[in-house]
Image (cartoon, rainbow, N blue to C red; front, side, top):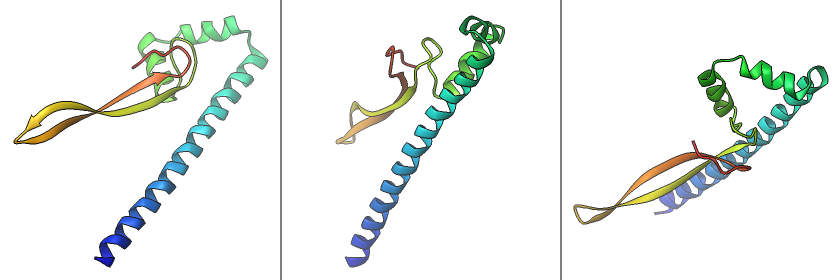
Length: 111
């Protein structure tokens, strides 16, 4: 019994550490994307930046933005939202489907 409790405590501590690392990574991404736009703005006007991005294929541009947690519509940060959606019962047990979506914090668009 003691081993199970120690194992559970270890797992909880590891999950807390992973969550802290994820938050730090997100903060670094935000700083880096802001820095990138600052560097571009030193050299180009917003219209020129938009033109540079507009010259890319639309799918490439959308994928690039989403891979870097940036909303393709407004340029805001997107975050991952996860939830369990009820799917009724299976052999007498409650069934849930794990759902995931990307959602922009500014405009509310989902991907």
